[in-house]
Image (cartoon, rainbow, N blue to C red; front, top):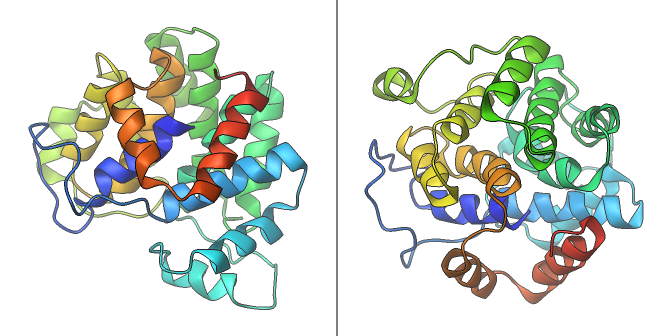
Length: 257
């Protein structure tokens, strides 16, 4: 899941100052991990230790309150309720990459993606977005080709996968919905040639850059293998030791080393 976290950090500086090019500095002094990374780690912790998703998301959210959560999620973190709030935002997809890496069959991946999403994002689009991102990671891990991944996502989730980045980019604007960012993130992966190129393409769309790059980055790691060392080392240096420990433990748990 380091690929998802790296995408988040690389995209973080462009979330509110979008660019429409792949030519940019990967890291700069403003680069930081955001809620995408914190909640990805929370999901990994839940999976490894069979912890309740809702309680674990709240635990991490309260521990890292300044990570940049959406307004409804932030209220939920500090509320007494663990009931979902029918969101179709892309938060369900940004945190789901550990599901795609941890489980050994597609049916379980889809079921677990729904479970991880539905504690907050129980709208059908919120669940669908998480399932699509996790399924793409699982299929990439299984060495399926890009055409097979594309066709599965299009058929299973009824996403328009025929658009190209060149068609999307000129008119694409900030969209925090699953249906308005998950297909675009997957297309960025499909058009890429390696991990770095995938993340650069994701950021170049504009919009919710850190989340799109987070989703793309998780799929790209699964497809291309390990994240390049020059990226991984920089990312590891930016994570708190507590989060990094979960990342390393999850790598062992999911056999990613």
